[in-house]
Image (cartoon, rainbow, N blue to C red):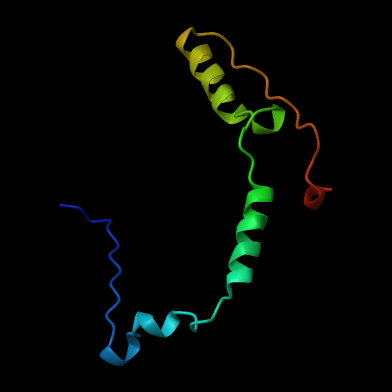
Length: 90
C-alpha cells in the first residue's frame, strides 16, 4: 500500500463548463485575391531543400557521441562553445 500519494481531483459544476464553440473565432469572408496572395507568400517563403550548416542536427550528433563514449568506456566529449549567443542572452 502506498502512503505517500497525493491525488488531486477537480469537480466542476455545470455552470463552470463552457461550450467549446464559444472559443471559435468569428467567421470571416476571404476574397480570392487574398487567398492567391497568401498562397504566393507561402510559395516565396518555402524552402525545398533543407541543406547547409543551418539545418544540421547537432543535438542528435552530440547525443550519438555521448552514447558511443559511454559504450566504449571513454571520457565524454567536450561540449562545443556556441558560435554566437542569442541577442536576448547578451
